[in-house]
Length: 365
Image 1 (cartoon, rainbow, N blue to C red):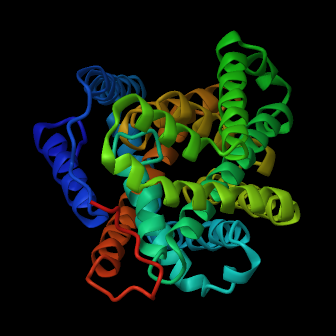
Image 2 (cartoon, rainbow, N blue to C red; image 1 turned 180 degrees about the vertical axis):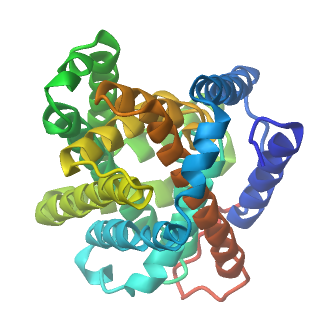
Protein backbone atom coordinates (compact mmCIF):
# COMPACT_ATOMS: atom_id res chain seq x y z
CA UNK A 1 0.00 0.00 0.00
CA UNK A 2 1.64 3.27 -1.08
CA UNK A 3 2.18 5.54 1.90
CA UNK A 4 1.14 8.63 -0.06
CA UNK A 5 -2.41 7.45 -0.84
CA UNK A 6 -5.35 8.61 1.33
CA UNK A 7 -5.66 5.07 2.71
CA UNK A 8 -1.94 5.07 3.52
CA UNK A 9 -2.18 8.39 5.36
CA UNK A 10 -5.26 7.18 7.26
CA UNK A 11 -3.39 4.02 8.25
CA UNK A 12 -0.50 6.11 9.59
CA UNK A 13 -2.93 8.15 11.68
CA UNK A 14 -4.54 4.95 13.02
CA UNK A 15 -1.14 3.44 13.85
CA UNK A 16 -0.18 6.58 15.70
CA UNK A 17 -3.40 6.51 17.75
CA UNK A 18 -2.91 2.85 18.70
CA UNK A 19 0.71 3.55 19.56
CA UNK A 20 -0.18 6.37 21.97
CA UNK A 21 -2.93 4.24 23.49
CA UNK A 22 -0.40 1.54 24.39
CA UNK A 23 1.99 4.14 25.80
CA UNK A 24 -0.83 5.49 27.93
CA UNK A 25 -0.57 8.95 26.38
CA UNK A 26 -3.12 10.97 24.41
CA UNK A 27 -2.50 11.18 20.69
CA UNK A 28 -2.02 14.92 20.87
CA UNK A 29 -2.26 16.98 17.71
CA UNK A 30 1.06 18.02 16.30
CA UNK A 31 1.71 21.58 15.22
CA UNK A 32 0.54 22.73 11.81
CA UNK A 33 4.13 23.37 10.77
CA UNK A 34 5.29 19.83 11.62
CA UNK A 35 2.21 18.36 9.93
CA UNK A 36 3.08 20.29 6.75
CA UNK A 37 6.73 19.20 6.96
CA UNK A 38 5.82 15.55 7.33
CA UNK A 39 3.15 15.44 4.65
CA UNK A 40 5.49 17.34 2.34
CA UNK A 41 8.14 14.72 3.05
CA UNK A 42 5.74 11.94 2.05
CA UNK A 43 4.65 13.75 -1.12
CA UNK A 44 8.21 14.62 -2.17
CA UNK A 45 9.31 11.05 -1.51
CA UNK A 46 6.44 9.65 -3.56
CA UNK A 47 7.31 11.98 -6.43
CA UNK A 48 10.95 10.87 -6.32
CA UNK A 49 9.93 7.20 -6.41
CA UNK A 50 7.65 7.87 -9.38
CA UNK A 51 10.33 9.77 -11.29
CA UNK A 52 13.00 7.16 -10.59
CA UNK A 53 10.75 4.28 -11.70
CA UNK A 54 9.72 6.24 -14.80
CA UNK A 55 13.37 6.95 -15.63
CA UNK A 56 14.42 3.33 -15.21
CA UNK A 57 11.31 1.75 -16.71
CA UNK A 58 8.89 -0.45 -14.79
CA UNK A 59 9.25 -3.30 -17.33
CA UNK A 60 12.98 -3.54 -16.62
CA UNK A 61 12.39 -3.43 -12.87
CA UNK A 62 9.67 -6.10 -13.02
CA UNK A 63 11.99 -8.36 -15.02
CA UNK A 64 14.75 -7.98 -12.41
CA UNK A 65 12.33 -8.59 -9.53
CA UNK A 66 11.12 -11.75 -11.23
CA UNK A 67 14.71 -12.99 -11.50
CA UNK A 68 14.96 -13.25 -7.70
CA UNK A 69 12.58 -16.22 -7.44
CA UNK A 70 13.40 -18.50 -4.50
CA UNK A 71 15.98 -15.99 -3.38
CA UNK A 72 13.22 -13.99 -1.69
CA UNK A 73 13.36 -16.53 1.13
CA UNK A 74 17.01 -15.67 1.70
CA UNK A 75 16.30 -11.94 1.55
CA UNK A 76 13.43 -12.20 4.04
CA UNK A 77 15.42 -14.33 6.50
CA UNK A 78 18.71 -12.44 6.32
CA UNK A 79 17.65 -9.46 8.53
CA UNK A 80 17.74 -11.80 11.53
CA UNK A 81 21.50 -11.20 11.43
CA UNK A 82 21.37 -7.46 12.06
CA UNK A 83 18.38 -7.76 14.36
CA UNK A 84 20.52 -9.87 16.69
CA UNK A 85 23.61 -7.67 16.21
CA UNK A 86 21.75 -4.43 16.98
CA UNK A 87 19.94 -6.05 19.90
CA UNK A 88 23.31 -7.06 21.31
CA UNK A 89 24.28 -3.40 20.99
CA UNK A 90 21.19 -2.43 22.95
CA UNK A 91 21.97 -4.98 25.67
CA UNK A 92 25.43 -3.44 26.01
CA UNK A 93 23.68 -0.10 26.68
CA UNK A 94 22.04 -1.52 29.79
CA UNK A 95 23.70 -1.15 33.17
CA UNK A 96 25.57 -4.33 34.05
CA UNK A 97 23.04 -5.44 36.68
CA UNK A 98 20.24 -5.38 34.07
CA UNK A 99 22.23 -6.68 31.11
CA UNK A 100 21.17 -10.32 31.50
CA UNK A 101 17.86 -9.74 29.77
CA UNK A 102 17.20 -12.61 27.30
CA UNK A 103 18.33 -11.68 23.80
CA UNK A 104 15.06 -13.02 22.34
CA UNK A 105 12.96 -10.76 24.57
CA UNK A 106 15.04 -7.71 23.71
CA UNK A 107 14.94 -8.59 20.00
CA UNK A 108 11.16 -8.75 20.03
CA UNK A 109 10.85 -5.43 21.87
CA UNK A 110 13.37 -3.78 19.60
CA UNK A 111 11.70 -5.03 16.43
CA UNK A 112 8.32 -3.75 17.63
CA UNK A 113 9.84 -0.33 18.33
CA UNK A 114 11.76 -0.20 15.04
CA UNK A 115 8.53 -0.91 13.17
CA UNK A 116 7.09 2.34 14.49
CA UNK A 117 10.37 4.13 13.81
CA UNK A 118 9.97 3.04 10.20
CA UNK A 119 6.25 3.56 9.68
CA UNK A 120 5.58 6.76 11.60
CA UNK A 121 6.75 10.11 10.17
CA UNK A 122 8.71 10.90 13.32
CA UNK A 123 12.34 11.11 12.21
CA UNK A 124 13.11 7.49 13.17
CA UNK A 125 12.56 8.10 16.90
CA UNK A 126 8.83 7.43 17.25
CA UNK A 127 9.38 3.86 18.39
CA UNK A 128 11.95 4.59 21.11
CA UNK A 129 9.40 5.38 23.88
CA UNK A 130 7.63 2.14 22.98
CA UNK A 131 10.81 0.13 23.55
CA UNK A 132 11.24 1.70 26.97
CA UNK A 133 7.57 1.14 27.84
CA UNK A 134 7.69 -2.56 26.92
CA UNK A 135 11.06 -3.21 28.60
CA UNK A 136 9.90 -1.49 31.79
CA UNK A 137 7.89 -4.60 32.65
CA UNK A 138 11.14 -6.27 33.62
CA UNK A 139 13.40 -3.43 34.76
CA UNK A 140 12.74 0.05 36.22
CA UNK A 141 11.39 2.55 33.72
CA UNK A 142 14.26 4.99 34.13
CA UNK A 143 16.75 2.20 33.40
CA UNK A 144 14.77 1.09 30.34
CA UNK A 145 14.57 4.65 29.01
CA UNK A 146 18.26 5.22 29.73
CA UNK A 147 19.26 2.11 27.78
CA UNK A 148 17.11 3.12 24.80
CA UNK A 149 18.68 6.59 24.66
CA UNK A 150 22.22 5.26 25.03
CA UNK A 151 21.65 2.58 22.39
CA UNK A 152 20.26 5.21 20.02
CA UNK A 153 23.36 7.31 20.57
CA UNK A 154 25.62 4.30 19.95
CA UNK A 155 23.71 3.31 16.82
CA UNK A 156 23.93 6.88 15.53
CA UNK A 157 27.70 6.98 16.09
CA UNK A 158 27.91 3.68 14.23
CA UNK A 159 25.87 5.18 11.38
CA UNK A 160 28.23 8.15 10.99
CA UNK A 161 31.24 5.80 10.85
CA UNK A 162 29.47 3.42 8.46
CA UNK A 163 28.43 6.20 6.06
CA UNK A 164 31.65 8.19 6.29
CA UNK A 165 33.95 5.19 5.79
CA UNK A 166 31.64 3.68 3.19
CA UNK A 167 31.73 6.81 1.04
CA UNK A 168 35.51 7.09 1.53
CA UNK A 169 36.71 3.52 1.08
CA UNK A 170 33.74 1.82 -0.52
CA UNK A 171 33.22 1.58 -4.27
CA UNK A 172 36.02 2.65 -6.58
CA UNK A 173 37.85 5.80 -7.63
CA UNK A 174 34.89 7.00 -9.69
CA UNK A 175 32.85 7.58 -6.54
CA UNK A 176 35.26 10.13 -5.01
CA UNK A 177 33.41 13.05 -6.62
CA UNK A 178 30.25 12.35 -4.60
CA UNK A 179 32.27 12.40 -1.36
CA UNK A 180 33.39 15.95 -2.09
CA UNK A 181 29.98 17.13 -3.25
CA UNK A 182 28.70 20.03 -1.09
CA UNK A 183 25.41 18.24 -0.34
CA UNK A 184 27.25 15.12 0.84
CA UNK A 185 29.63 17.12 3.02
CA UNK A 186 26.83 19.23 4.50
CA UNK A 187 24.71 16.15 5.23
CA UNK A 188 27.58 14.38 6.99
CA UNK A 189 28.49 17.50 8.98
CA UNK A 190 24.90 18.09 10.10
CA UNK A 191 24.43 14.40 10.96
CA UNK A 192 27.64 14.32 12.98
CA UNK A 193 26.87 17.60 14.75
CA UNK A 194 23.34 16.49 15.61
CA UNK A 195 24.57 13.23 17.11
CA UNK A 196 27.34 15.01 19.05
CA UNK A 197 24.80 17.45 20.53
CA UNK A 198 22.47 14.56 21.38
CA UNK A 199 25.20 12.68 23.25
CA UNK A 200 26.31 15.87 25.02
CA UNK A 201 22.76 16.51 26.22
CA UNK A 202 22.53 12.96 27.57
CA UNK A 203 25.56 13.60 29.77
CA UNK A 204 24.44 17.01 31.10
CA UNK A 205 21.33 16.06 33.14
CA UNK A 206 19.22 17.70 30.45
CA UNK A 207 15.93 15.92 31.15
CA UNK A 208 15.52 17.11 34.73
CA UNK A 209 16.80 20.58 33.85
CA UNK A 210 14.35 20.99 30.97
CA UNK A 211 11.53 19.54 33.08
CA UNK A 212 12.29 21.98 35.88
CA UNK A 213 12.52 24.89 33.43
CA UNK A 214 9.20 24.00 31.83
CA UNK A 215 7.56 23.70 35.25
CA UNK A 216 8.86 27.12 36.27
CA UNK A 217 7.65 28.52 32.96
CA UNK A 218 4.18 26.97 32.91
CA UNK A 219 3.52 25.97 36.53
CA UNK A 220 1.85 22.78 35.31
CA UNK A 221 1.50 20.29 38.21
CA UNK A 222 2.06 17.29 35.92
CA UNK A 223 5.63 18.44 35.29
CA UNK A 224 6.27 18.60 39.04
CA UNK A 225 5.07 14.99 39.38
CA UNK A 226 7.53 13.87 36.68
CA UNK A 227 10.55 15.46 38.35
CA UNK A 228 11.61 12.36 40.32
CA UNK A 229 11.39 10.23 37.19
CA UNK A 230 13.46 12.70 35.18
CA UNK A 231 16.07 12.94 37.94
CA UNK A 232 16.26 9.12 38.07
CA UNK A 233 16.71 9.03 34.29
CA UNK A 234 19.50 11.61 34.43
CA UNK A 235 21.15 9.69 37.28
CA UNK A 236 21.06 6.48 35.24
CA UNK A 237 22.49 8.19 32.15
CA UNK A 238 25.21 9.93 34.15
CA UNK A 239 26.24 6.74 35.93
CA UNK A 240 26.48 4.86 32.65
CA UNK A 241 28.68 7.44 30.94
CA UNK A 242 30.92 7.65 34.04
CA UNK A 243 31.22 3.93 34.72
CA UNK A 244 30.23 2.21 31.49
CA UNK A 245 32.49 3.71 28.84
CA UNK A 246 33.61 0.24 27.78
CA UNK A 247 30.00 -0.85 27.46
CA UNK A 248 29.22 2.18 25.29
CA UNK A 249 32.16 1.39 23.03
CA UNK A 250 30.97 -2.20 22.84
CA UNK A 251 27.49 -0.98 21.90
CA UNK A 252 28.94 1.18 19.11
CA UNK A 253 30.91 -1.79 17.74
CA UNK A 254 27.86 -4.06 17.78
CA UNK A 255 25.86 -1.44 15.89
CA UNK A 256 28.63 -0.87 13.34
CA UNK A 257 28.60 -4.60 12.71
CA UNK A 258 24.85 -4.36 12.26
CA UNK A 259 25.26 -1.62 9.66
CA UNK A 260 27.88 -3.72 7.86
CA UNK A 261 25.49 -6.68 7.83
CA UNK A 262 23.05 -4.38 6.02
CA UNK A 263 25.71 -3.61 3.41
CA UNK A 264 26.34 -7.31 2.93
CA UNK A 265 22.63 -7.69 2.17
CA UNK A 266 23.15 -5.46 -0.87
CA UNK A 267 25.86 -7.81 -2.20
CA UNK A 268 23.65 -10.84 -1.53
CA UNK A 269 20.70 -9.35 -3.44
CA UNK A 270 22.89 -8.41 -6.39
CA UNK A 271 24.21 -11.98 -6.43
CA UNK A 272 20.70 -13.46 -6.29
CA UNK A 273 19.55 -11.43 -9.30
CA UNK A 274 22.61 -12.52 -11.26
CA UNK A 275 24.95 -9.53 -10.93
CA UNK A 276 27.93 -9.89 -8.65
CA UNK A 277 29.48 -6.82 -7.06
CA UNK A 278 32.36 -6.40 -4.64
CA UNK A 279 31.85 -5.87 -0.93
CA UNK A 280 33.32 -2.39 -1.34
CA UNK A 281 30.66 -1.55 -3.92
CA UNK A 282 27.97 -2.97 -1.63
CA UNK A 283 29.28 -0.84 1.25
CA UNK A 284 29.19 2.27 -0.92
CA UNK A 285 25.61 1.58 -2.07
CA UNK A 286 24.52 0.88 1.51
CA UNK A 287 26.16 4.08 2.75
CA UNK A 288 24.54 6.17 0.02
CA UNK A 289 21.13 4.64 0.74
CA UNK A 290 21.40 5.38 4.47
CA UNK A 291 22.62 8.93 3.88
CA UNK A 292 19.71 9.53 1.53
CA UNK A 293 17.29 8.09 4.09
CA UNK A 294 18.66 10.49 6.72
CA UNK A 295 18.10 13.41 4.33
CA UNK A 296 14.50 12.22 3.95
CA UNK A 297 14.14 11.98 7.71
CA UNK A 298 10.52 13.09 8.04
CA UNK A 299 9.11 10.83 5.34
CA UNK A 300 8.00 7.44 6.70
CA UNK A 301 10.84 4.93 6.09
CA UNK A 302 12.66 7.63 4.06
CA UNK A 303 10.36 6.86 1.14
CA UNK A 304 11.78 8.11 -2.15
CA UNK A 305 15.15 9.24 -0.80
CA UNK A 306 16.11 5.66 0.02
CA UNK A 307 15.34 4.47 -3.52
CA UNK A 308 17.08 7.52 -4.94
CA UNK A 309 20.20 6.68 -2.94
CA UNK A 310 20.37 3.23 -4.55
CA UNK A 311 19.77 4.73 -7.98
CA UNK A 312 22.49 7.36 -7.59
CA UNK A 313 25.02 4.95 -6.07
CA UNK A 314 24.55 2.42 -8.88
CA UNK A 315 24.96 5.14 -11.49
CA UNK A 316 28.15 6.46 -9.87
CA UNK A 317 29.65 2.96 -9.77
CA UNK A 318 28.90 2.41 -13.44
CA UNK A 319 26.16 -0.12 -12.74
CA UNK A 320 22.78 -0.08 -14.44
CA UNK A 321 20.36 2.22 -12.58
CA UNK A 322 17.77 -0.52 -13.16
CA UNK A 323 19.75 -2.76 -10.81
CA UNK A 324 20.03 -0.03 -8.17
CA UNK A 325 16.29 0.63 -8.10
CA UNK A 326 15.50 -3.10 -8.24
CA UNK A 327 17.66 -3.77 -5.20
CA UNK A 328 15.99 -0.88 -3.38
CA UNK A 329 12.52 -2.26 -4.16
CA UNK A 330 13.52 -5.76 -3.05
CA UNK A 331 14.76 -4.29 0.23
CA UNK A 332 11.46 -2.43 0.53
CA UNK A 333 9.53 -5.69 0.20
CA UNK A 334 11.74 -7.19 2.89
CA UNK A 335 11.17 -4.15 5.10
CA UNK A 336 7.40 -4.42 4.71
CA UNK A 337 7.55 -8.11 5.67
CA UNK A 338 9.47 -7.34 8.87
CA UNK A 339 7.22 -4.37 9.63
CA UNK A 340 4.32 -6.82 9.61
CA UNK A 341 6.26 -9.07 11.99
CA UNK A 342 6.97 -6.04 14.17
CA UNK A 343 3.30 -5.07 14.28
CA UNK A 344 2.38 -8.61 15.33
CA UNK A 345 5.02 -8.48 18.09
CA UNK A 346 3.73 -5.06 19.14
CA UNK A 347 0.22 -6.49 19.44
CA UNK A 348 1.48 -9.49 21.41
CA UNK A 349 3.77 -7.56 23.74
CA UNK A 350 1.27 -4.78 24.39
CA UNK A 351 -1.31 -7.11 25.89
CA UNK A 352 -1.86 -6.44 29.56
CA UNK A 353 0.89 -8.03 31.63
CA UNK A 354 1.65 -7.43 35.31
CA UNK A 355 4.69 -5.26 35.80
CA UNK A 356 7.31 -6.13 38.36
CA UNK A 357 7.15 -4.10 41.59
CA UNK A 358 8.74 -0.71 41.09
CA UNK A 359 8.85 -0.95 37.29
CA UNK A 360 5.59 0.73 36.34
CA UNK A 361 6.15 2.85 33.26
CA UNK A 362 3.00 4.86 33.01
CA UNK A 363 3.20 8.61 33.65
CA UNK A 364 1.55 9.90 36.76
CA UNK A 365 -1.65 11.82 36.27
